[in-house]
Length: 349
Ligand code: NAI
Ligand code: MG
Image (cartoon, rainbow, N blue to C red; front, side, top):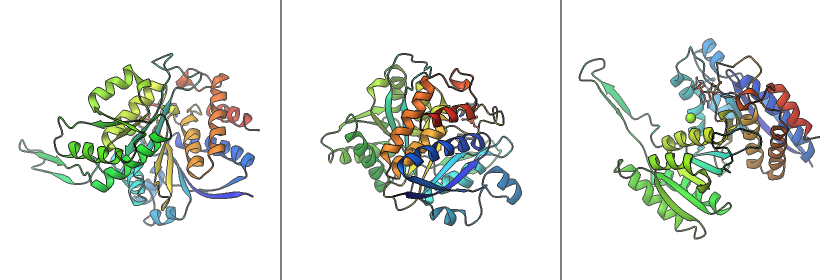
């Protein structure tokens, strides 16, 4: 029996246009081996849409997306449009409308990928809160341009919001090495962070098999560089998780390899899968972008759609390609985007 999935594809800007087709090819190849068929629906949203229509996506864009099983996104952002437009015009509305409150970012050392911490085995997952926290629209500026100018930005932490992300992270840790590290800053941020700590502790009481550890985010950042092997699952607020996952990704090798899933764990709404990197305008159009982050994001999508075996096979296929030396420039090779995709596909026949 064939499983069919309707996927909305937003390749977006810059190298999104190059790495998305590469990943789609690999997903079709692994799907064919496992009786999975993808109906890819390409949506030409992003900065070109913004230039033509003044919006990153159509007015009814969210209604359109609601009908799909998942969203597969490349990247958005161009030098001549403010990032606040591209981010708040597309990515953040999707994450919030579809309650994608978990931003899942696995970080692992990959075979053949040079890491600044050569020889260290890193295998951790960062669970970033994706709907609230520091990234809020509450606040404002007054007396603009004067010496008395004031800017205020409020953080929003809700019991429901912290609890659900902590519960997801604890469940994930229970299925891995059983260690959950919570990023905090309750010594300096005296209201929201002690609340975060309290709610996380409460959730951990339901997971006797999981050891909880609370670390101040500044020390945690240093420790991630010095002792990355000590971490299994890290749960963090929106801002802390954003910073820690870029750091952890860089420590493991290249940002070009790092994947992410924006998950609605209940499956009430589509989840969205995208590489951690952006549109990389400095290398766009040259055919040299690393497609591994996009391909690995595709594996996360397969896993979420209930195809764990196919997902694992896709990961093994790109690891074998990397190990055989087919690597893009950012990770010390000479291969093009298309050559990497072809090498991954060749391992799936
Ligand atoms: P970036 O991730 O696009 O690029 C940072 C550096 O990493 C660049 O030197 C780039 O060449 C390199 N790089 C990134 N991905 C690569 C890949 N797959 N292969 C090889 N090299 C790769 O971040 P940057 O430059 O800060 O942002 C560029 C644009 O992307 C901005 O407009 C930004 O807002 C947007 N952006 C979008 C994101 C998204 O769509 N989720 C995430 C991050 C940034
Ligand atoms: Mg980031």
